[in-house]
Image (cartoon, rainbow, N blue to C red):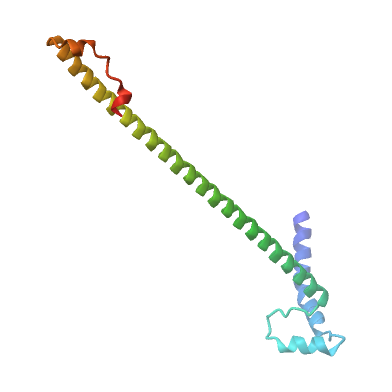
Length: 148
């Protein structure tokens, strides 16, 4: 029964719709400006109304969007600036650390070379002592600091 009522109401609307549309389009607007505006546009196109309040609201909205976009762009620029500064600081810290490591390695290599020279002198002193050189036997052990 419900289906029958829905179909009947839909059919009656379909029959009365053309009559309603004719009545709505046949009524003349009260002022001539609207009639002139409706005749200047091709059929089937929508002509926006000229409403100062709507235009002001749209302009205000667009200004708000532009301000928000500019603020977001400024925030993003500041964030990129901080990022690049942080990357620069990190690169400087890495370079300083590498320089420190290179200095430590150079110093260590110099100490190891001096120790190697002192050991070579000590081995020569021991060999001389074993060959009967009493002066070599009584000499102090070579100091690696003297070979730097």
